[in-house]
Image (tube, rainbow, N blue to C red):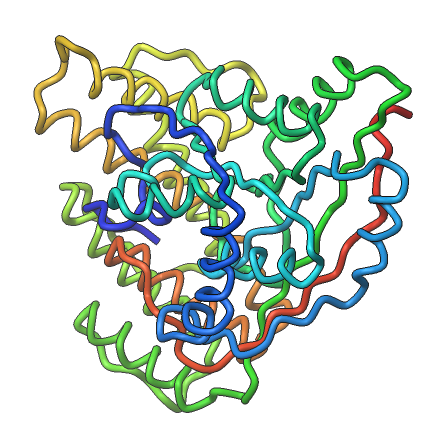
Length: 380
C-alpha cells in the first residue's frame, strides 16, 4: 500500500522540475503510431490486451452530428493500459483526440515525448496551477478540431468495478470552454466506462501473485486460508514493512475493519506532515484534498532554486506523503463485497506495486470493454 522509491510516474509523485510539453499533432506520424499501438504495443507483454470492444460507438457518432469534435471524454482509470486502449478506441471511431497527461510521462525519454506530442498529447502539472495546460485544453475544445480526453480520477487505482471521486479540474475546463464559446456552440461532455477483464479465469496466476506477495514480506502463503483474509493479512505485513522503513513501526495484527485502520494511519501521517510544513487543515476538509495540499508544499520546496529543506528531510516527507496517499487509495471493502478472481488479482497487484513502487506487467491475456455514457450538453 506503500513503497518509498519512485520508479514509475504512474506509481509515485514526481519532484522533477516542470516544463510544458505542447501538442504538435502530425497525421502521418499519428497514423503510423496508431498502427504500432494496435498491432504491437497493446498485445505486448506490458499490456496483454488482445481485444478492444467498443459497445456503443453510435453515441459518439450522434454527438458529432450536433457539436462536431467539441467533445470532452471522461474515462475512468482502472489500469495502466488505459491510454493505449483509448487510442485504439478512437482509431476505430475515426475521431482525432488529444490527451492531457502528467508531465513526468513526457520526461521518461525524448522519444516518448516526441511520439506523445505528435499524437496530440500535452502535459499537465498535477501538483500545481498549470495555466499553460489549462489554456491548451480550452483551445482544443474551442477550436473543435480534436476531441479532448481527461482522466478525471487523476490516477490509476486498479479497480475495474468502482470509480473513485472525480477531481474538479475537468469540469472546470469544460464549463470554462463553454463560457467562452457561448450557448450557440455547445460542448458535450461524455463519460466513458472502461473495463478490462481476463479472457480466462487466471486462477493459477492469482495464486502466483499470492506467493510473490508472501515472499516480499517474508511470510508463508496460507493456501488453505480464506482468500480475502489472506490478502488482508499479507497486505498488513506489507504495510508494517514500509512503516518500519520509515522508522514508524506498526504493532499488532490486522484488525476486522482494515479500511478504517488504513484511514487512521493516513490521517496520523498527515497531521504530522501538516505540523512540520506549517499547514492548517480546514474543518471538514477531505483527506485526499489535504494530502494534495501537503504534496504541493513539498513539491514547491523540492524544486525551489534555494531549497529550504535538506534533501534527506525532503525525501522523507515526500515518502510519508506518498504513503498516506496510497493508504487512502484503497477502496474500503471492494474485495470483501465481491471477491471475484479479477478483484483478487487487482488488489494483490496493487499491494505489490505500492510495495515496490513499480508497475507490474499484467498476468494474463485481457479484453477491454468500452461503453460511452449519455452526453451532457454543457451549454444547457
